[in-house]
Amino acid sequence: MLRISTSRIACLVLVAAVTVLLVHPESVAAAGCTGSGTYTLSGKVRTSSGAGVSGVTMTLSGPGGCTSTTKTGGTRGFYAFFNVRKGTYTLTPSKTGCAFNPPSKAITLSGNTTANFTASCL
Image (tube, rainbow, N blue to C red):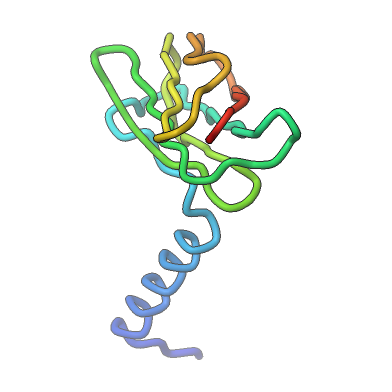
C-alpha cells in the first residue's frame, strides 16, 4: 500500500497549480461571470502580418455587471476565459500604444466561442 503524507499531497497540489500558471499564464476563470451552462471564450490577438501580440489586457463584461480580465501570453497572443456562463458579453482588448480592429466585440455566448482581434502597435 502506498502511503503519502498530507504535507506531500499539499506540496504536489501546489506544484501542479504553479505549473499550470507558468505554462498557461494567459488563461483565467471568468470570475463573477461563471455559472451553470458554462463555456470557454478564447482567441488570439495578432498583427496584420500574423505575429502574436503579448501583454494585451482582454476585458470581458457581461450579464449582471460581471467583469473579468486576463492578458494575452507568449508569442502566440493567445487568451482564454474558462467557465463563462451563457449570455451576451462585450470583449475589449487594450494595450498602451496599440489600436485594435475591431475595438471591441459583442459576443452572445451559447457554446465555446473564438474571438480574434488584429492589433496595430507603435
